[in-house]
Picture 1 (spheres, rainbow, N blue to C red):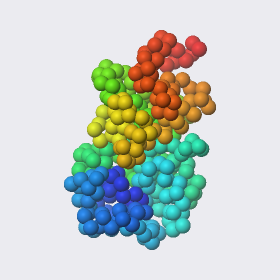
Picture 2: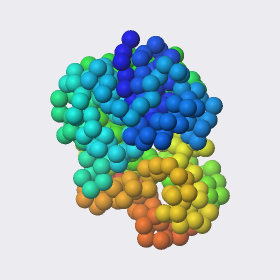
Picture 3: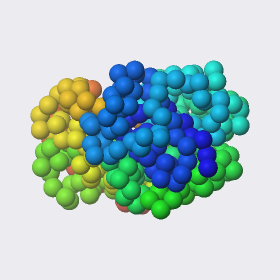
Length: 337
């Protein structure tokens, strides 16, 4: 059995810890916040994020990193904005033979770097694996059958994560397209915010289905332009994650979008959700990337205008519907430009 250290005691960190514990592994759950650790040790439950999910008594909950050097696997389960800082903490103690898994979904603001590359800069001696796919913590923690993908530039590392964390309730596939897996996991949050806005506007199923379909086309278009494989976006980290994030009540991005669609200012909606809404910051990153690489991403353009320029969501929908006619096949209209 493996020694596993989970960095981040939020919903997904706890869900993975509980899931790995069912497989017989030895778990440590870490948080940088002493009050959070004290509360989790006292109640053995994250009552706000995962009510009713008990943290087994033999999972240590701590603010200490002293045990890092003894771990087989370290899981970074923090918001994307905290990945570099978390990796810097690890660098002081981690052994080179420890595999590092990252479950965060996003790109580093300013640098546009993949989180795998952020880990590579801060932890150059370790092997890194990105775990992504349709996996709400609320369901994974309760043993609901879930499938995800482990992506790495080191096949042995991805297969190690597959063998170590995979079990009755968690099926893990492997991929070497780290770029595609990360982009799919990050950019689907933008579309999920848009889907929530449509729900807030009571736009209907037809509109939402169109948004999701054209949304994955935009994500794939940018991904391919950056060097990812198109088929990755038809997989778990692409369309799979897009479906669950756009449709589920558990999705923070969707819930935030609903508030915006109902008339709340975007920044206030993010604040009201009270947890990380990755799609808000990722919209700005996606907008900047599409400009840098001259990629057509009309949904991203309209989302940027709504979130950062005060555009009325209803006007954004109208503008999308009145765009010039296109052929659905990407190859046909791209080659005809």
